[in-house]
Length: 295
Image 1 (tube, helix red, strand yellow):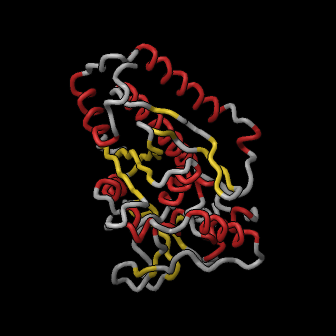
Image 2 (cartoon, rainbow, N blue to C red):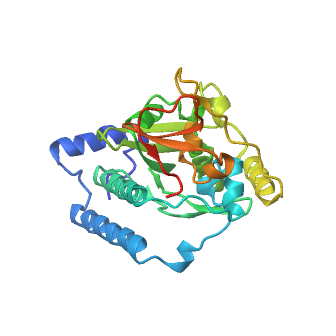
């Protein structure tokens, strides 16, 4: 691939957009081979979904992919507490995200950029994980997001509002490679917009630096100690006012948590047009259908 070395992450989005606009594959790219590779990746993904490997299904313990999640969530998971059953539409959402990831890596290669180290095993202080890949030599985590979530990647503020622990996850992958910088390739799955977000531990002037500079080895050790302890870690976040109703609703991270009923046994849920809303305190019952959380 003769063109390798002329591309960097700085031009990735522009190069993919150009590819989609004119469909001209750069010189040195074997389009037929890349299409075959993408097809094989799709087959492997479907096998993983519908012909699951016991080793994959029964993985236990901490993973780097979740090391940035709240310690209380990880404690429940590590100690095998029973959480909510994952709903069919959520499984579809997860599968859709994996398909988008493979599509973005296909477009990355087709636009002339180098993709290496896909699903490479990483390890930090005994906790293992699998990185998505490196693009043009940089550790990259590929994310499909909502339009709302995409804004944080686009404007670079993810580190200041990272409820799902994306920062520690990618930083751990980079650290395992002896690197101090990492990046995200994000796609707004509703509109198809792309962006690349870079973070660098040596860039002390970055406005988000104080949000992403925590030592990853110290974090891993703290989480390991926490989940192995008998004491349940403190709550991840407190409920917040639901407008002026007097009701209290769960925060974003708690709303998505499969263990929320353990924290809020009297929790109620209501089917708003924007999605379910979970109320820990109901002063004025909403004028929308209540969801049976025991179903």
